[in-house]
Length: 283
Image (cartoon, rainbow, N blue to C red; front, top):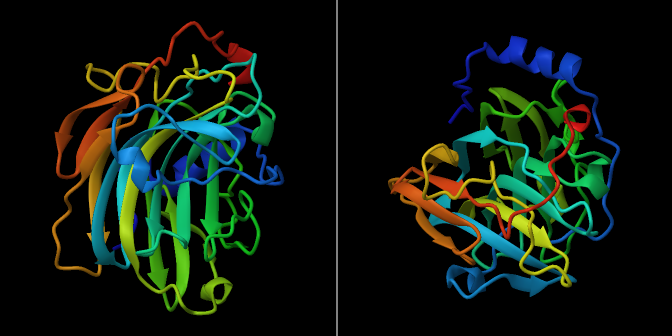
């Protein structure tokens, strides 16, 4: 399942343009980051899920299947994150987990001022080992690409393919048709070779004193409206199962979904609205 980029540019030229357009932040590591995948409790529309010292809202598409890889085409946006609060972020990502949901590999984009030092969208990778959290963009990640690096800033309003695949026991991540690097299978002592839970989703982290928050998901439009952010072309590898996403939202009054198919959906929302938008110079 090679990762594919279906944007307006050839992958290599596009990747090179990212480096010239935006500084990187690959060295920015957040202490004790929150989990990246929606818990099972997030399947009900009962409001944000509060754990790990913060609250989280999700619009999530999930599928259970035994798989060796996942790929989606995903829009990169620049949502406003509440500048008056600490610990808030907005992201979109794909993740693969084992049956117990204790081992995870993730890749996506995030607007996280505390992690990255600005209000721009940045590429990120993350992983969990046997229920133990790690760190963004490191903690055993092996960098391979000379031009695509976790932590690098991404221009908003582009579309790129994000993918994860296990190859020879290692978990590789791809962005824009290029292998970025991999998490060695030795991190899991060779016990994590296939995934059983596929998640593709938007996430908003909210300070516990700021629930609900004005932090946006996607481009700030409700997923049920035209023009909202989207995730498309969901594909899975190493299985005879067909791609079939089940899409749910934790707080549909603030973040919801629309245009659902087995392989795509729109997502997003304004939260409570009213966040100060990032200035043009910070994007």
